[in-house]
Image (cartoon, rainbow, N blue to C red):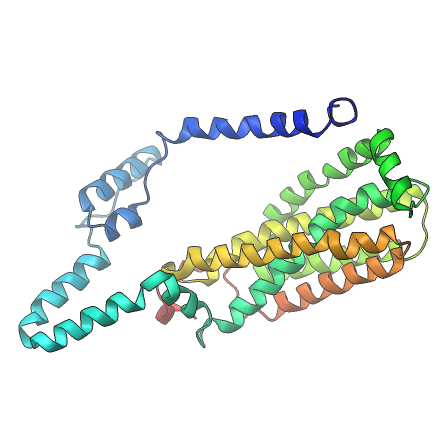
Amino acid sequence: MVMPKFGWRLLLALSSAPSFLLLLFYAATPESPRFLCTKGRITEAVEVLEKMARLNNVQLPAGRLVSEKNIELDEVSESATLLTDDKEKDDIKDDEGSNFGGFKSVSKLLSPKLMRATLLLWMAFFGNAFSYYGIVLLTSELSNGNRICAKQEVESVHSNNSSLYKNVFISSFAEIPGSFLSAMVVDRFGRKLSMASMLFTSCVFLFPLIFSQTDILTRISLFGARLCISASFTIVYIYAPEIYPTSVRTTGIGIASSVGRIGGILCPLVAVALVHNCQQTTAILLFELVVFLSGVAVMFFPFETKGCRLNDNEADLN
């Protein structure tokens, strides 16, 4: 409704406005009890837990809340008299240096116990982002009947033919069943099998696009591929926090997401550019290869996290 008549600026403004509504939830959002414990704010952590229990109509377990930080401080204070002044200074320097600039967390991601999972997760994020945004872009490139190649013709059609926006609008509905599908399979079949099956099924939907097809088959193929990639993208964001211990969880997810954004950046520069140069077959084969390798990477993840609790440190990883 907006883009063909009013352009990108109004569309961007209208799309961004609802995000400001999230600020209304700031005051009502409780702080993380784990964060409060690590800061020594035990009383506040207990208050948050009591509110959570009250809202869920359950009782907190009997006992006293004890944080790992307090335990570590108690152990240090008990053994402090056994340490010499020189050893205390050395320990303090080592502890300060290990956390400098967050390099300790990054180095843990590539430690022997996490390296395999980290590298495979990077590949999965890259493939999901590359193919997801590529399918979105291909919708406007392949859904019109003329299979436009010349750059000038592409620009004229994109600016004047509102049917392109209708096609994108229709394909966007694939996100809805994709979200429902991921919710139905992720706990029933597990993270690995669910992700891999979605990625390999996406390859099946993309395959007909290698050859010249009718408009209706093109729409069906793009709709099915986007549905599966959307489901896979949702599941990888569920799986990623579960494979890392608490100490490096946000760092691991952040770096993996950044690798995925690199895939999103390269997609239009490589794959869509091939379509503009009348190399549709090569472009689709590239998408097929990236999606297939992402599915293979998922199958080689070191462990399944379905039904498992979150780990606090590397020693807990199984």
